[in-house]
Image (cartoon, rainbow, N blue to C red; front, side):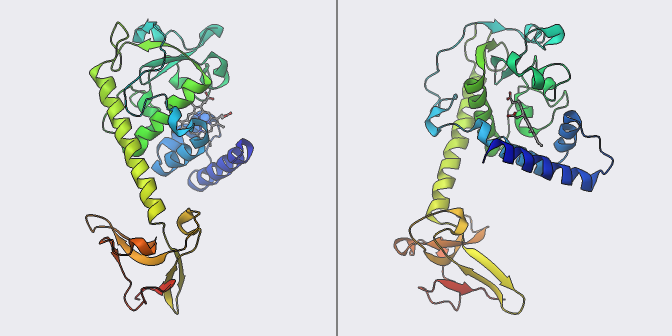
Amino acid sequence: MNKLVKLSLAVLLLASVIAWYQPNFIYSTKSIHDFAAKFPGLVSFFKWFHGGKGSVAKTDHAVPKDGSSEPSEPTRVFTKEELAKYKGENGGDIYLALMGRVFDVTRGRDYYGPGGGYAFFSGVDGSRAFVTGDFKPEGLIDDITGLGSQDYIGLRDWLDFYMKDYESIGKLQGLFYDADGKTTQYYHDAQQWIKEASDYKEDEDLFKEKYPMCNVEYKPEEGSRVWCSTKSGGIQRDWVGFPRSLYSADSKNIRCACAQEADLNDSLLKEYPNCPKDAPSCMLPK
Ligand code: HEM
């Protein structure tokens, strides 16, 4: 989606949410962020908004998917105190760190400089806040332990974004790199969390392609009907499939899936009662 359309949509949606909850809200970037941080749903929306920004080709992640090799690296090592000097005060340079990598973001002064909407990221490693949306000082930390799978993917995408759009100028001595700029055990753990999240997402995407969701419609007098089409579940394909109940491996979740003939014997799939097995559409029991 083009940037202007995305931005207009973002502003419209956010403005309506804010107008709904707090009609007297002051519209500044800072207050929008403070407000947004209180609503997890908005943070998901932010992630979507910035999705295009971080997304690069699948094979081009700055964090190697297998954690094996490192792209060519700058050698300068910053301490936290040193990094804190680069907040762009008095027209000076602006640096920020993400997962221990220091980037020169001076040319993004409007965002990161004093008074900018993202000034809180300058001079620190606030990795965690990039995905939690918690921009308070206690949220702007480098510790990314215990986040969700989506968050690790978000961090991977933000790192891709900074590697692509800004210059990586050094390492930050701390959780990810030691005083010599060598990777720490924490760095390798983080790589592993990101790899696991990426693998999980890849498996999930493949599963969604194998068993796309059905179309559903509800009419009070008739009840719910499910059916398949070449676009159902948002998966464009050249087959339609047959509607089945799809059980998760632990049987806790059930959804309607479109299955191809070759997969109909999968034990996770169940036919709908009173619906012929080759019917393209089924009425659900009321
Ligand atoms: C977790 C929440 C968010 C984070 C961590 C975040 C972070 C950032 C960062 C770091 C930048 C600067 C990117 C650069 O260097 O080019 C940026 C830019 C921007 N952000 Fe956000 N943001 C968040 C939420 C939002 C929301 C909710 C909106 C809109 C309603 C928004 C609108 C913008 C806009 C318009 C820009 C400038 C984009 C451009 O010109 O490409 N952000 N954001």
